[in-house]
Image (cartoon, rainbow, N blue to C red; front, side, top):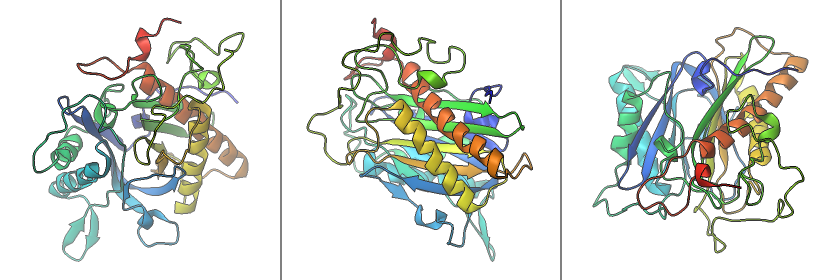
Length: 336
């Protein structure tokens, strides 16, 4: 089944979604917000052992609220959960949110990654900057946005290389669009051994992350487990992501979409879903295509979710750029 990228090759190829970034370069951290207009059916799946989250319980299919106004991805470990409050404030100013009598309550689930040991100055004073970054990210939301060293990926690092923010999209032959957004801060590696080749190479469309394919012959050290920190502690890592589609899905179908997108983590990161990663995928279904996929089309949709996520992860590292006081090099500096 042929896949092709959408016109932007970003999650915003799914109509109804906008993405905004905000960052603090001194601290080396940032926030990315996906704004849903109209609200989207949502789900979540956590497979890492050390997650940091807000408002994820309400996304379970048996609970009352099944649509959200936005999703927040933030750096800052537990401090970064403040970003959702800032995003919520901006959305409320826009008149968006779940209606309860005369009140509007924006529904904003969030997840965080650990970027506190990346060379940035973390002496931010009494309060961390994340509430304001979350507010600014919503205000910056648009169809086009930066990837690489941007938003929630500003301070991200992986095993041996700087991480970042990545995105990709896929248009299926039946007209359904799938988009992925990811902040890659994994304890594992996205490249094969010490080479420039990405584990996600089989899913690459064109040369969106270098066009190198897999190494031939395969590197002798390809399956060696390379960790960012050999003394890794819980919450020091985490890849957090959003998978979105314009298909018509129930909340249960959205959860299945999130589960499938985790296969993209496994295809793009070695190892993934470890006890010291808080690996998490949010899913959004806007229904904008009007297509409710049956069993056969559903298989194509969930396969596309995994492939699109793998591509977004590779793109996040491929697009990272150097900055002062970095503790790891960027992919573009690797020569072999």
